[in-house]
Image (cartoon, rainbow, N blue to C red; front, side, top):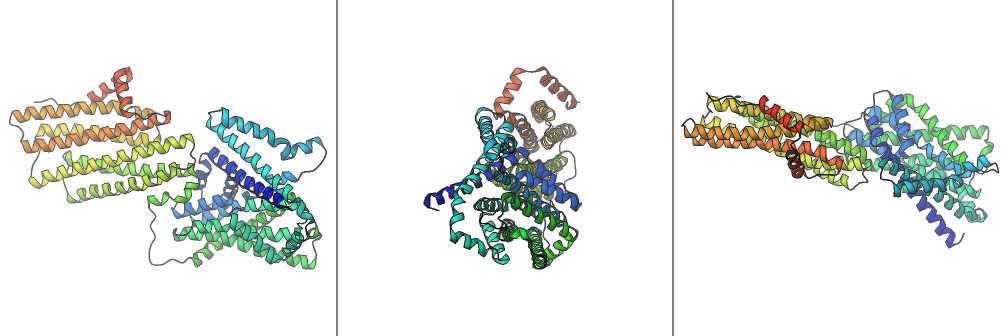
Length: 590
C-alpha cells in the first residue's frame, strides 16, 4: 500500500465520518425535538424505556448522543436513574442499525435486483435528489430530507473509498500479522476500545472494521473481541460529559459503563468457555460486513436481555461508586439549561421555552403582588420582601437564559427554532422589566405606608380599575406566551390601548382634584409614579404579544406593527378596544 493508498483511506475515513455527522444532524432536525421530548416524558416502565432508547438512537444514529442526552436529563432532574438505565440499554440496541446499513456495501451478485440493493447503484439518485432539495427548495422539511440523502451518499462513498484503499493490504504480511495479534481476546478488546474512545463513536468504529473486512484478512476470531471492546470505548463520551455534573448525572454515565463492561465480560467468558469445549468453526473464516452487523446486534440484544432484569442492581452499583454525602443537591430551573442539550438544538430550544415559561409565572406573581399593595391591600414587610426576592430571581433567569440562548443561537437551528430563540430572547427582557416595575410599585406602597398617606376614595376606586386592567393584560400576555395562542396574543394590543386611555384619564382627574384642593402634591407624585408603572407594564405585555405574532413571519418591528395596526383602524381592533374601555370604565365623579 503506497502513500496514495494511505491518502485515499484517510479521505474515505473523513468522508465516512462527515457523512455520518450530516446524516445524523439531518435526522435530528427532522425529528424537531419530538424524540427527545418523548424521552423526557418516560414512565418508570423499564421495557418502554429500552424500546424508546432504541428508537431514538436508531433515528439520530448515535448511541453516544442519546447517552449524553440522558446524562443531561438526569443532571437537570428530568429523568430518574431507574429510567436512565433502560434508555441506555436501548441505545446500545439502536446503534446497531448503522452496521446493518453499512453492510449493504458487501452485497454481491449478478441478479439485477441484488445489484439494485448495492449503495453504488442507488446513492447517485439519492445524491441528485438530495442536492435538488437543498438547492432548489425553501421548504425546511425538504431541505432536511435533502441533507439526510446527501449525508447517506457521502457516508456510503466514504465507506467504498476506505474499502478500495485497504484492499491491497490483503497481500501485506505485516498487516496480516497485526490482525493475528487481535485474535487474542484481551488485545482485540483493548484495540476496539481504544479506537472507539478516540473517535467517540461505536457506529463509526464498527464501520471502519467492516471496511477492513474487504481485505479478507480479518477473521471472525479477531473481529469479535474488537467489537466487544468497541462497546466499552463508546462509554468515554458519556463519562466526559458527566464531569462537573450532579452525582446522579455521574451515576448515569457509570450505568452506561457498567452495562457495557459487565455485558462484555460475561459474553466473552461464556463464549470462549464454550469455544474451548466445542470450537466454533466460523472463527477461522474471513469476516464480512454482514457478519460484523450480526455479531454487533446479537451481543447488544443478549446483553440487554440478560441485564435488563438486574437494571436496579446497576443503579445501586453506580450509587455505591458515587456515594451520597450530607450535602443535599438541589435541582433548580437553571439545570434544565444543560450544555449537553446544545448538541440537540431542538430539545435545547424547548428547554429554554420551559424555563422562560417559569420566568413568566414568577413575573406574573411579582406584578400581581405589587398591584395588590397599591390596590387597597395592606402593606407588610413580608410582601415587600417577597416582591424584591422575586425580582432578584427574575434577574437571574434573564442572565442565565440570555447566556444560554446566545450559545444556542450559534448551533445549527431550524428556521422555526431560530424564530423561537429570537422570540424568547426579546421576551425575557420584557419580563424582567415588568418585575422592575413591580418593585417600583412596591416602593410607592412602602413610601405611603411609612408616611401614613392614603389616596382619596375616588382615587382608590380609579386605581382599582387600573390595577384590574393591568392584571388582565399580564394574564393575557403570559397565557398567550405559554400556549402559543396567537388569537389570545392579538387581544393584548387593544387592551393596551384602553389602558393608555385609563392612564390619561386618571392623570387628568388628579389634576382636577389638585386644583380643587382634594389632593396633595406629595400624593400626586406618588400617583403619577404608580400610573406610569402600570402603563409601562402594559407596554411590555404588548411587546411580548407582538413578538409572538411577528417573529414567525420574519418580521420584528414592534413600533411599525403597532402603528400600522392603529392606522388601519381594523373593525376587530376598534371593537375590542371599545369593549375594553367599557369593561374598565372609571367610576363617575360624584
